Each structure stands twice: as structure tokens, then as C-alpha cells.
Image 1: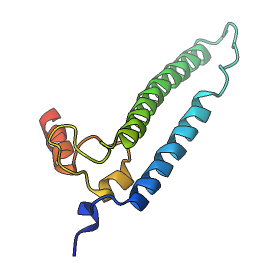
Image 2 (image 1 turned 90 degrees about the vertical axis):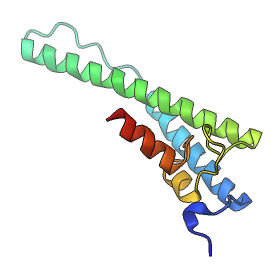
Image 3 (image 1 turned 180 degrees about the horizontal axis):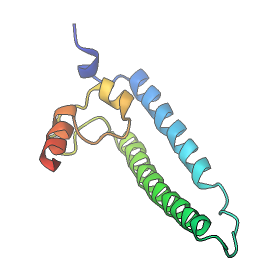
Image 4 (image 1 turned 30 degrees about the vertical axis):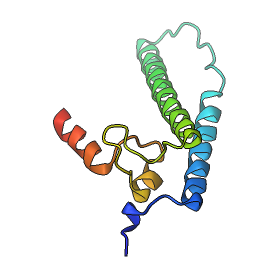
Length: 121
């Protein structure tokens, strides 16, 4: 019996994975659509000003991360449409269903992603 992580992707799997991608995309779009922060004006207290600056930096970083993830999700949805979803962009090997359930925008197999992580250390 095939391991769930090695299962060939069925139409049902692809539908579930598409729904996960769309759900995550919708949540990210909603998050990024939150209006700009209110102008705080001049902060008389230097600690308040420093805290506000740090908060602003964190929001910018988070939004950059969100935009990058949104691009990954859009790319995964495009791969679904083109029929190349669930295949490693590096080796052409199938990406396991369990991995795609965990990271539906995955571009590499688990072993390839682990090797990349080890190389970065």
C-alpha cells in the first residue's frame, strides 16, 4: 500500500489543495487590505517614537513576507492550471501529497527542501 506522502495526486487531492491555496490567498489579501496606520504625529516621548518606528518596521517586513507568500500561492495556482503542480521544479519528481497538504505552494520535494536547508546552515 502506498504511503500517503507518496500518493499520486488525484482529482480530489488537487481540488483540496486548490481550496487550501485559495483560502490562504484570500486570508493574505484581506490582511494586506487593512488600511494604512493612522498618522501618529510627533511623539514627545523618545521611547514612544522608538516603539512606533519598530512597529512600523515590523509591519513593512510582515507585508513583504505576505507579498512574497502571495506570489508563491499565485505561482502554485498557475502550476495547477498548467498541469505542472505537484512536481519538483528541480528534479521533476512528484512532490508528496502530505507535503503539499502542509505547504501547498511547495516547489520541491521534502528531501530537496531538506538538502537546501542543510546547505544554508
